[in-house]
Image (spheres, one colour):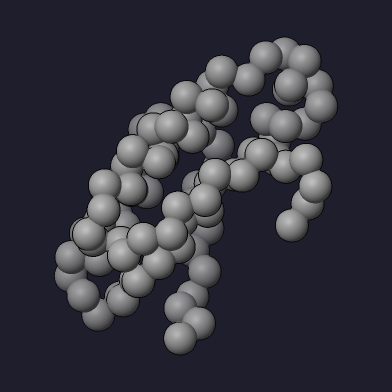
Length: 88
């Protein structure tokens, strides 16, 4: 991890929690950064990491992920989310 990089972390079972709350909180932070913050690249390096029990075989998980990706695009909080593969 990079030092001084604002990071929001949410670890949950994907379909069991309202992860959109974490995304909304991150969006408020990201959109509230000042010009001074943007000059220090905090705006470019801020990130949200969402991890937890995701199984691509479960329709609920796929639907929830699609909703969360759509939300991040709608809130215009940066580039499209990247998806890491399951490691377990």
